[in-house]
Length: 131
Image (cartoon, rainbow, N blue to C red; front, side, top):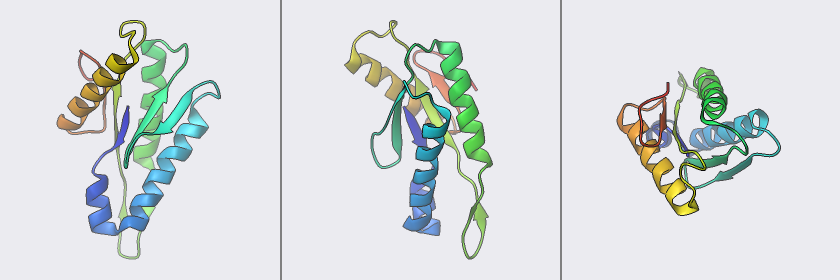
């Protein structure tokens, strides 16, 4: 699970056009950086799901961390100012969680923990921050 940190603040402060640009940027980064075999989907307003096929915890963390770091370096321009955005990730692995509903639930819980710890990080389900 991937979530854009503080998107509501961006929409409220810089407008929904700026927020839409941020969402499109995340989508583009995921498409560019993930493999063709991986599955990417927009889950909600500012949430995405990425299923990294045949990726162990270490490789999934490395891939998501590179995307997270790249995303945080992007600068967005408005007429008045410049801003950047971060993202948070909740990571759960199969076969440790072999039921799709449980896999989703624990990755979502890890994502909420990442956001509660200040965002801009990856949390492994049932464990600590990986970044």
